[in-house]
Image 1: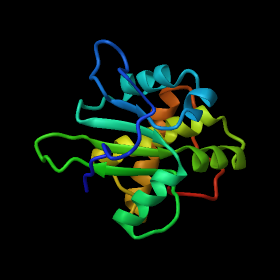
Image 2: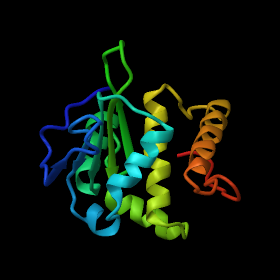
Image 3: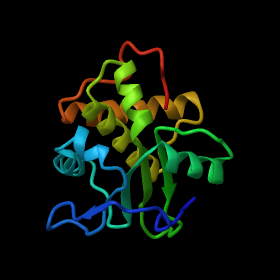
Length: 169
């Protein structure tokens, strides 16, 4: 499923890194900058271990916007931490990944994890969805969780699934 996020308000827009693609990152809620001032470098670190295409957009939004999208596309009238919409162009990977600030912050606090670590996990999770990883059944979920843990380890972030009763996002 692919959507255009151009209808949403854009508070901040910037290029990620000069040699990367323009308009890869959309910031719709300034709290992302306030709580993660190194957001740009976090995304670049993730890009170095899990590259993504110029057709990928990371949108840092809030519960209000993501709840509307969650209802519109999934018929679930509640916010969620992240939504991933695949590009319908079958010649390339890519799509839109939208993050909800309040939900992600609440989850990080509840699990006593740094917000940057939880966000890194969710960015990787969304990027893996764009590469056709899924967690619909147990085998798929285990494969995806192992890949997430492997990539997070490369960033120096501990396995979020270890000692966790919450198995799949």
